[in-house]
Image (cartoon, rainbow, N blue to C red; front, side, top):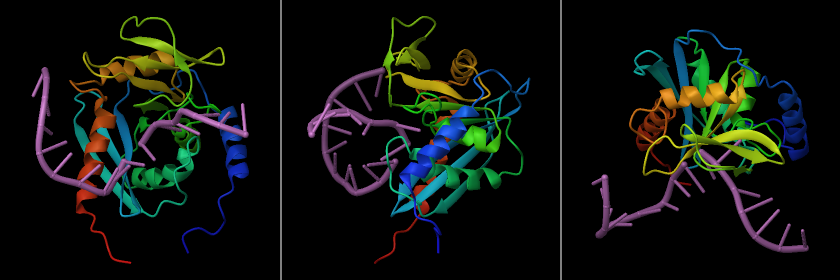
Length: 222
DNA sequence: GCGACAG
DNA sequence: ATCTTGTCGC
């Protein structure tokens, strides 16, 4: 009853090509930003726990959060993460009582082999400014040495994202445009949202609440 | 053909 | 991402 049509990689690729054409790489976002939304997902017993956390930009404090538990529609396939997690994340966002100005997604945006990672996917589908924050590179190579805590990641001669050193003594993170946010702005904002941890607050807190929710989930037999 | 591969 | 005990380090 959960899925009415079989997942088709070719169709998914076609969808990614279409979404990719709609990505806006320039800054088209509210100023000032008031509410931002951190997004992350965890898994337990074959279920996905999608978490959306609303933060006030001024204080970086949690305004509210929501979880949505469901069965993942497809297995994890590198480069097709959005088709596994985006539906659940959108359901979690819908449960929020206020609308965020911008999404901070756990995963890449433009820094994707086909330039359409989950952050861009969500941003375009929801027509919402978005930024991708990943812990590992999916494609591309960091170039040069870091200036002001970051250096570009280049793929096929194109700057697709940034390697960002958010904390001394810790591994860098990877930031890219999702939708309606330029790369320099994305990096600037992410650095503003770091509070003593490797991950910026929206992503870190989304991961935290998702982990809390995971512990509540009880596995069943059969 | 082979290896790599966000979460 | 998850499965997993103790363990090394800030």
